[in-house]
Length: 216
Ligand SMILES: *[C@@H]1O[C@H](CO)[C@@H](O)[C@H](O)[C@H]1NC(C)=O
Ligand SMILES: *[C@@H]1O[C@H](CO)[C@@H](O)[C@H](O)[C@H]1NC(C)=O
Image (tube, rainbow, N blue to C red; front, side, top):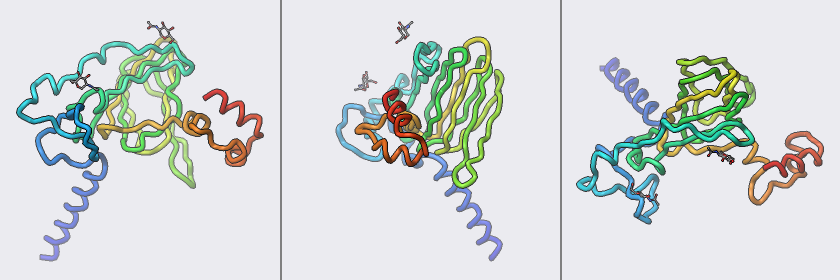
């Protein structure tokens, strides 16, 4: 009896940890988002299931390369619930990332998702930093076919270290992972965080902070 109870507790613990590892579990087969509804809930309102058709479960276009002619030399094409309403309540999304030579996907956080990335073309240096107080930097050089995981909520990045373009496909454990790019959030917030505060936080001269703010 006691051992059955322990088993039940164990199973409950596993079930709970799975449920908390991504978005809430759905309560129906699907809930294709009705983007015309103005009702605000945690997620999006369902389209009438009787009106849902096969095309609702299809997204096209990830074969198209992103334009990497920008300051960081990369382009993320995110397919979340906004682009693909069928993802509503399913706890999953996808991204295509193109990198020019030496291009980076700058340090950022997904507040609601773990990310699993597969290199399709080229070589990438990837890394993430663990939380305080260790702040351990975990990094790896990836080649075509390699798969790497960035745990939920940790700062991570990718950099193309090959000679040609690179391409990666990522899956994320939320219909709406969110992206916080560190530099943009800290130095480009609207309105700006005071440069005195940032000067103290980064232990850097105020002129440096003002210059950083002017970049974002
Ligand atoms: C809402 O979804 C329809 C059908 O998927 C799409 O054509 C339309 O552009 C979407 N509208 C908005 C505001 O996202
Ligand atoms: C890529 O983006 C750059 C900068 O915005 C732009 O000048 C260029 O025309 C774009 N290239 C294509 C093929 O869209």
